[in-house]
Length: 531
Image (cartoon, rainbow, N blue to C red; front, side, top):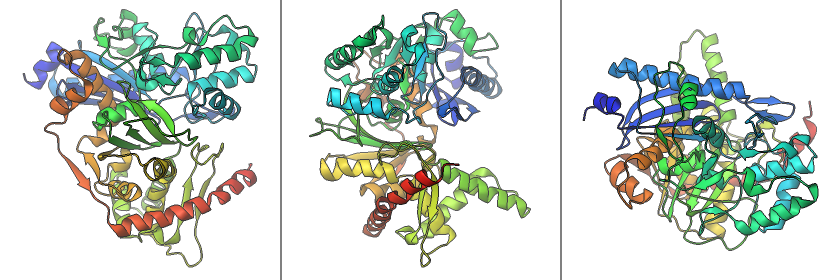
């Protein structure tokens, strides 16, 4: 069928992902071919010490993204989008969305970026003998309990952003297992929250006398391919302001951006891995067996089908890098030059390839917020150099590109050097890899392994959740997700693979020596820069 006919007949899948700086919708056919894209840019706010988005921003942003997609379909194909085969919602993982029995918000939404949960994370890690990162939903919930916040006794539903949007659209309190793994530890055998840890948590909080138990207020866990509800009349009206979208459309389980990144890079089977690099940067390595011990630097999560997965998650990625590019854009404008943002990124990124393998002794920290891997609960932005450092534009940009991978590399080093985890392929996706052959080359040097970037890499997690929706809508009887991806989606797709040179690997290792040594400077900056 032609693309227009597929849209008219509803043989399509829509994925919408609420990322840190952009809400993106991608409409695909059942083979993953992109038919239309909708975009809405947004940004989090730091209010009363909390990184957050208001409900108004969430609602308006979601609708604006869908409206942009609907207009794109109308302009390109001359038809109105009324029916879709399946829809999937994804969002940045973790955080804390707290609702009462009527669905009202009880407390400000806390994103993954918040690190105000140290006591809770430490106590739960010890209780479970399982690493609970600061940004996990259960850490946020327990910290609210420890802080004596009055709203906790009124809780009826605690979820992530994707779970909240899915509930708005379907009325179903469910979550994909990948996103659930950032809420509470998962048992990969039962494909559910770990029952023993749930019981330990309930016993821990029993003294507070709440009327609820953990399993009663957390969303029900679903694996990829399971039915997760249908679009209600209210949900259709909420999403599509034009009133054209019909109710009754199936939805796949809502997922987090880590899970959609795995799908978008075909990294859902053991011995595969991917690195998603953008506002935050995280590496996902699918394991053949559990790690030998607990590491506070490593999150243990799952794929959208429940395979155990080791995650090295850095809260800070390219935000400071982007700020510097914007500064160069201001300079270009001051000099009377009209340069697009895309051209700025391409020129500056590509020029960094002329820099020294170790960035000429330059060092930077793009810590907008705290960083779990380096055990810092706050962040400060810093650029450092010695008098004899090779200070030029190429090294300056190279250092900021390298440091975007710095924290995540520390976690990867644990997996590959200490745990000797085997990986046959690593895929890269996200804005960091948009300029061809630059970020990809630096990641290959960081992991000392070949890195592949598919032609679809820039579509990111929105494409990944669209593929999960397509899997729900059109999978064959008994077809596993990895089979669907191998045989239907990635079979004919092309990409580029880069292998690192010994000089590049050695240069990145030298940079990382400086990075580790300089963490004491970052700590001093946090203590000193209190204004």
